[in-house]
Image 1 (tube, rainbow, N blue to C red):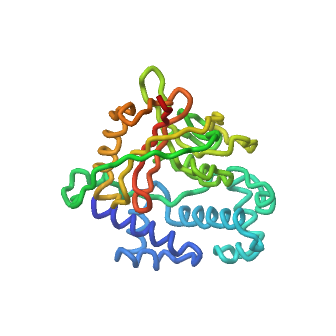
Image 2 (cartoon, rainbow, N blue to C red):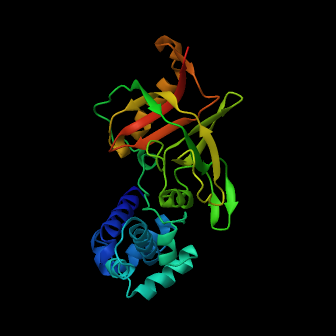
Image 3 (spheres, rainbow, N blue to C red):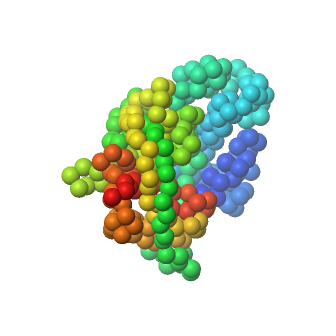
Length: 297
């Protein structure tokens, strides 16, 4: 199973890197040295979808982001992402998202994009002994100011017309909707999750921050909360690291410091009745951070 998961992740990486080229099954299977038939069976067994279905959804989602974020003619985007014509892109877009590409460009409401899939994770290898962290860096803390904002996200599991949404990293539907939200907050950005407190217990949420005057769409299953006032935060962090070999240890160390820290030693107290806690998890870019709001004593 270990070897199979690595092979499928290699296929997923190749498909994403070559989505515009619409590679053939033969070309895809060549990347891992398996026959096309075996490659297809293995991919479906590990991911729950076929190579053809996954590749079509990824090409459509990447085309949707190009429609949203560029002024490139839609016909050019259609050809660029492997569709035979603008009409073919429009049919696929309408079937997947319930609107035409031109209408989406005029008003880019949240849609369920298909995110790149990852089947290779630290959970697959936590007991394998083949991934060893060599140079652990102790987490540190600093103070950061986050201005007033609202938060658009999933705070509980919900059944929607598109499927089940729950506030976890492995909810592909939720991740795709969050990725499609254009008007994210400049500091509390897309996929910046966090925790709320109730009766001394933490509850996880996932989504994106938005401006305090946000009046855009609220997707089914998500809530718009706030506004949360501007506040200083203690940021407990670890610098960039290798996700597969270091993630579990890094997250544990940062959260151990964050949840047990006494803010009075730096002249503050927690401000979690007014503001939410946040989490930034971009291992190879900024590392891992837990942010807890504070107020001067």
